[in-house]
Length: 266
Ligand SMILES: Cc1cc2nc3c(=O)[nH]c(=O)nc-3n(C[C@H](O)[C@H](O)[C@H](O)COP(=O)(O)O)c2cc1C
Image (tube, helix red, strand yellow):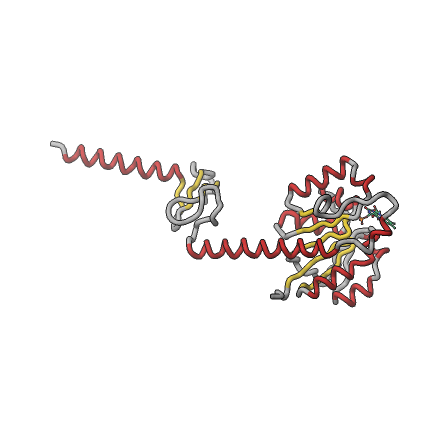
């Protein structure tokens, strides 16, 4: 079933396949996505901007909006394609000197699925800084389709022959897969929360429902002066008590029992 009203942001960098980004936009639209295209300044020279804007019905953005201009819509998924050596390295380093990099810098931490389809020759791909960038971004949960199962770096000076076979569809399929997975995870969590308020989803550190204390987590106590301020808290289905509070309650009960016992003795 085609699901409507999902927004795909396509970030286009300055490499040969950029001229064919309309293929990806059409493919996504056929599957019910609204597409918005963001270009790096270097990508602008590769694009037929009026054609893309006519296709997507939204402006191709390469700069932060000016006051009064409408915001871009928040994305359900992002595809960076073609992704250049330059943008991948800058993104991994935390640099944000283009609008495209600004979006990537921020969205990386937000859990939005991001798929990257590079277009890079083997000389650049072999450089240690690039290999580190790919590894670091993967470590942050970014899906980079490079190497086995993705795109292989090409021989230098052969890029223009490979534009026609650039695998836009692999990037789109991966984005669809990740969005479906995220949707399943969220609805599982919602169901768990409805059935077991206060209990984390199955798979958490101490397992899932039914019954009893389930999740250990650090929580800040409301009173900043309290000794329980950053105490380890076990979440119970209907209430939360810190271990220290539980221990204090138990020892008060024990002292009470001893006192009552003393009073009863002649
Ligand atoms: C015709 C042409 C083709 C290019 N092809 C590539 C490429 O395939 N891969 C790449 O990483 N850079 C390529 N570049 C170089 C990038 O455009 C350049 O590094 C630029 O700074 C990238 O900026 P961006 O990452 O902000 O888009 C190409 C440049 C030109 C002019």
